[in-house]
Length: 84
Image (cartoon, rainbow, N blue to C red; front, side, top):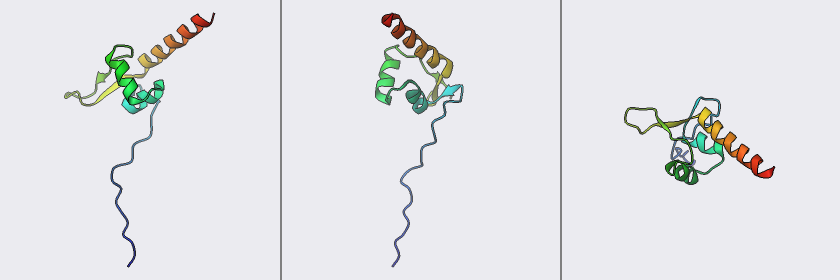
């Protein structure tokens, strides 16, 4: 008897998208180079930009890419300031 093909257990994740003006959590984490746990700790502590609500319920959130870019630029400037 031939083996049955199994259904995948879950949907495959969509690819990361860094081109959008709003980044969802997976893309935002990868964009700044943090894992999810560290990323959300820093957001909660106010060290990273706060997300915006994308739905009325607040379950869907995203981060504005320009704000994350500005945060990264500030980190780079701080590094260069210390190196000088």
